[in-house]
Image (cartoon, rainbow, N blue to C red; front, side, top):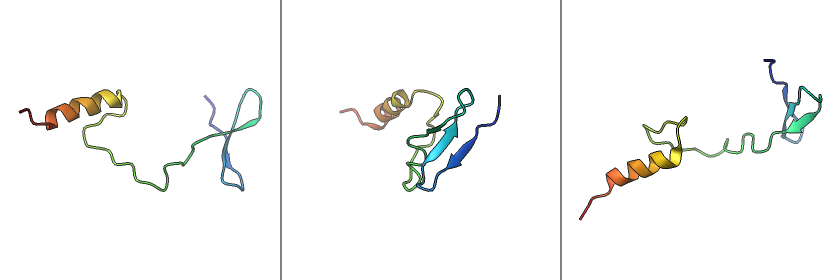
Length: 65
């Protein structure tokens, strides 16, 4: 596997070179979360479905009446 050819344009867009065509394509959303914090609870595994983990964690924290 070859190393990705990544560059940033003067306008701030991130571009990635397509190895098959040689053309640069825009990486939409790159660095979009850079300015904001992304709070993650401990115990959340990002390699597994997050919604299911959030629902499981939420059901244990609620008190039953």
